[in-house]
Image (cartoon, rainbow, N blue to C red; front, side, top):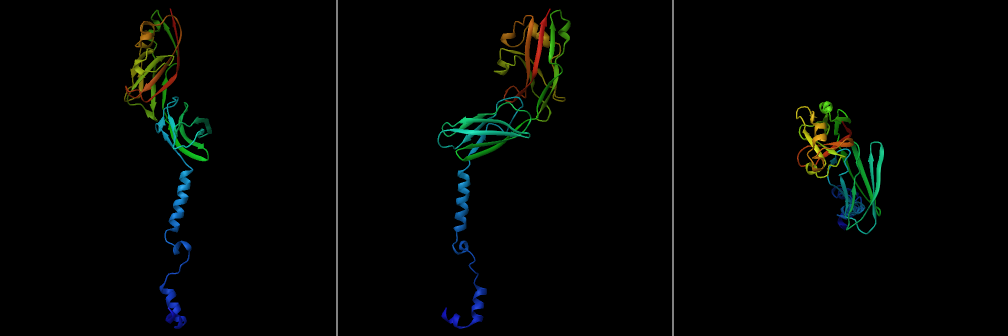
Length: 256
């Protein structure tokens, strides 16, 4: 080294060209930058928690989607906030149990929704969709006349499923909308198949006939006496009844 120094300026210049300059502490100490980046990433990760969805989306008017905040430490409540296109639509706190907090999303209209949650300085987020689905009826007011003249009253309609006409499935009708149990419900009046080509359905003249003479469910098997009743139609894409949504209520009057 002494010999290079004594050689003069030209020798020094040659060394400078041959040896890359150490321009930073990170370059001088291999691995330091990587450790720093990893530390920042770990800190960011520590300030977040995951939210698991029971499904990516849900049908409109149905409270079925469950959000689960996971990896929580300590006791307390998680603050959930759901935002839609028009702003915040729902806020609620959920208690932490065994490191988790669950929220049952209320029935919401069609659209895209974002979820934000917070717990002791930590945050979580996710999103879900309420599908563009709809069950439309030709009427929501029906008079069933025992004389038979109103047996010709037709209850029909159409089904939009996730943005387009339904290509399969059934439309079931239940008294008071009591659909629990699906086809095993004692309040099932009957069902109509959906036309795969048009997405439409038609109960024909059987709607009032079933109300007066007896429906499918045990509670309706003997028919209903004169009076005012409420029914509701539900669409299900198959017999499994794991994906469904409902219509508006149908007001029915039974008379002589």
